[in-house]
Image 1 (cartoon, helix red, strand yellow):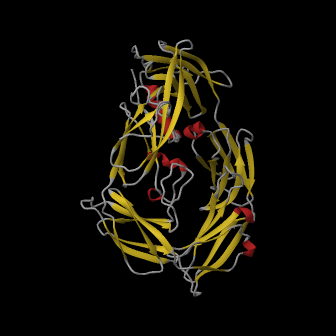
Image 2 (image 1 turned 90 degrees about the horizontal axis):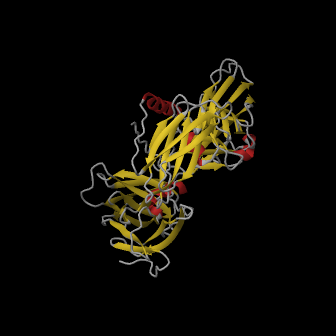
Image 3 (image 1 turned 45 degrees about the vertical axis):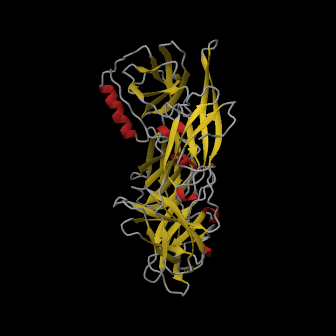
Length: 528
C-alpha cells in the first residue's frame, strides 16, 4: 500500500504551484497504489471523467480529509492522498471510527482541470463509498494581442486573481500568472479558472497597460492597445528649500472595484538636485496617487493626481528622533531581538477579540538585545506611547514627547506568564476536545501589516483532556472566546446532529489554571 501524508500549514494554499503538483502526480503515478483496510476504515472509490467528452482522466491527485465529530475546523487538513490510474479510477482508504468521524471531504487536483471539492456524510458501519463518475471541467485559456508600439516582443503580461474568488479556487489555482509577448505581440495563458483577473503589461519594471477585470470564461481573446505614457517631473526639497537627494517616488494605479487590484505603475529616485522624472501610464486622476518619501522624513501622498496639475516643488518635513536604552531580562539568547512599537498617546490599550479592532502600531523597529540601545526616527514633534516587546520580554510601555531630545531609559525585565485551563461540559463534567480557544490580544502584540486573517496565531485547540495553554504572555487581563461542537447521533437517521457552541469569558489575570464549563447548566464563567 502506498500512503503519502501531505499536511499543509493551517489556512494556507493547498496547491499553488503547478510544477510542484505535476511532480506529486508523477510520484503517485509511478507508485503501486494498494488498499489496506481495517475495521475502523472505509474505502472511497470513483472515476474522474472529462466533463466535455466523458473520457477518463489519469493522474488526478485525490486528497481526502476525514472530518472529526468534535472538530470546529473539520476539513482543513487533507492528509490522505492517491492518484487516478489510466482509466481514471481511484481507491483511497480513510479512517472511519464512528465515535470519531462523521464525514469526509474530497479534493481533486489536476494541472489541466479545475479543482473540485466534494463532501459526504459517513454512516457508522459503512465500509465502502462508491462515488461513481465525477466530472471535471478543463481549465480555461486566454489568447491576447498587444499593439500600439514598435518592437512589441518581450513585454511581460501578468494576470492576478481577484480577491472575490472562492476559497477552494484560491487553494488550488495560482494567484498570479505571467507570460511574455512574442515578436508579433501575441501572448497566451492556460490553466486559468472561471473567475476575474486583473491584467497588467510591463516593460523594464514600468506598467504600460492596465485592464481592471478579465474573466476567461466570458472572453477567450483580448486585444490590448498600449495607451499613452505621460511624463511627471518635480523637485523634492526640505522646509528650508534645500534639495533632498535619494527620495523615492512611487506612482500607483488604484483598483476600480472592491475585489480588483491596485498596482505600482512606476518608481523613480531624486538626483543630487532633488529632481525626478517618471513615466506614468495615462490614468484617470481618480485612480492615480503619488507617494514621495525618504527615511527620516514624513512621506507625502497625493491622491487623485492630475499629472498636468501636480506642483513642481514638493516639500518634505524632517521627522524627530527618539533614542534610549532598555534594561532587559537576563540570560536572553545572544541572537535575540527586542522591538519598540510606537502608538498614538491616546490609544486605548484594551484587550480585544474583534478582528476588525486592529489598533496597530504606527511604527515598529527591532534591535539586538546585545546592544540594548534603540533609535526611532521619522516622528512628528508630538507625544507618543512606546512599547518594548519581544520573545521572553514582558510588554512595557512609556509615554514620550518626541520634541524632547533627552535619551530614554526603559526597564522591561518583568517575567512572562502563561494562560492555561481546561474546557469541560457542564452537565457531565467530561472534557471537551478539539475546542477552539481564541484569546484577546493587545495592540502591542500586533504588527503594522496585520490583517484580520493573521489573527489565528492567537488561538489554540484543546487536547483530548480539554486542556489548552497560551505561553509567553504579559501579565494582564485577557478574554477568551471558546467554540466547541456538541454532537448527538440520531439512530433513526444514522446521522450526527452537530451544534456549534460559543462562549466568551474574561480572565482577570494570567498565571493560574482555569476550568471553563460549557452547557445549559453552566452558572459561572470560570472556576480556578
